[in-house]
Amino acid sequence: MPLLSLFNRSLLDRAARPALEFAGVSSTFGEIEARSNRLAHALRARGLQRGERLAFFLQNRPEVIDLWIAAVKLGLVLVPVNVLYRERELKHILADAAPVAVVTSPDLAGFVPAGVICWEVAELAAESAAQPSARLAVGGVPETPLALIYTSGTTGASKGAVLTQGNFAANGAALAREWRFTEEDRYLATLPLFHVHGLANGVHCWLISGCHLRLTERFDHAKAAGWFEDYRPTVFFGVPAMFIRLLELPAEVARAIGSRLRLAVSGSAPLPAEVHEKFRQLYGSVILERYGMTETLMNISNPYDGERRPGTVGLPLPHVSVRICDESGAPVADGTSGEVWVKGTNVCAGYWQRPEATAAAWTDGWFRTGDIGVRAADGYITLQGRRSDLIISGGFNIYPREIEELILEQPGVREATVVGVPDPVRGEVPVAYVAVDAAVFDEPATVAYLRSQLASFKQPKAFVRVDALPRTALGKVQKRLLPSWQA
Image (cartoon, rainbow, N blue to C red; front, side, top):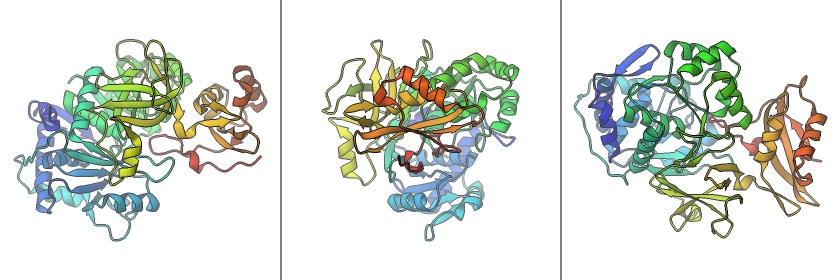
């Protein structure tokens, strides 16, 4: 089904229904339909044509949603840009994507490189208000590109994934069905809309189901309890860092929130099993962890009905085929680690202007994710880290996440990551970087515990203490930014 047809279920069929709340201002689906139509006319008046690229560099606000829907109607290609990016990242993305302009706000415009055309979002909205409210729909087929979304670049320069209307339609329809969205749901949206987690999952499940959405500019743990109490959401999407902060709420507050929360979804970074269990105990709600990528949207999910197994990302979604493969591309047996390969209508059309990278990432129609995983006999898949993160020490493979999970169980450890560092004898050895409460963390006890749980070659060579791990806006650790370590 075309993406706009999915949106029509709410924009047209539920026109009078309350849809969106932001900063105390509410909109119906019909008002969003009219605003996006006016914006489409304004963009056309500024000369934008089907297939042209338009970037946005904005905090969460309703205009982002209006812009997204208008792009679907006009057949434009949007380029969402992380609001935390600064000169180096912005220069790379905007030079690579070459958009006609960047829609932004006065507080962010100063970070945009000189020479790039900026359109101020409030001015564009004011201009749109004078345009006709009749739909201007060029339309699109599943193969029509809709977004050029850049990977997080945790290991180098980011690449633009070309995501089509069909990718977003397949992903949104599957998640709305699998996660049991209905128009009676109330979705608290705090994830950034420049990322596929908040946009492809959250916004699309909302538009397809016709539920109610409260949008916030960003997640703020100091305001979270008030949001949950005031809005009383039934659905919340977050990243592990958000769920860790939510564990700080008083037990009675958490229990009340959990009694109303039918679905709490975690993604974009690994969720420690310890956090999964603590959240269940405190909130009485079991987090649903899933696995996706910029290039593929969602691939795997713990079931809505059934066991949500801590430490795993669950089972392949119905529209996705998954293999676990060895270095030669041959499927491995259950219980054996290998690279996760996926195929489905969710997988992007390739990397923007990177034919070599596209060719390297696809084999016989399968997308090679670069993630290492293992499948249990009953089908549940556990991720063990990025292929590029694999540590080979003395000929033995070490998967950092296995060590990280054990370190995170220790008192006083707030964050932990393990990386391989060069070693003249073993090639590489693991080193742990930890953010800890110094008064609580007991390094000798932690070392002793790891020795009791892990093979000798997996023992961290050292513990390097840092104030906090460098992360992307969605919580992924940027290992390349960690301080160097020398024995």
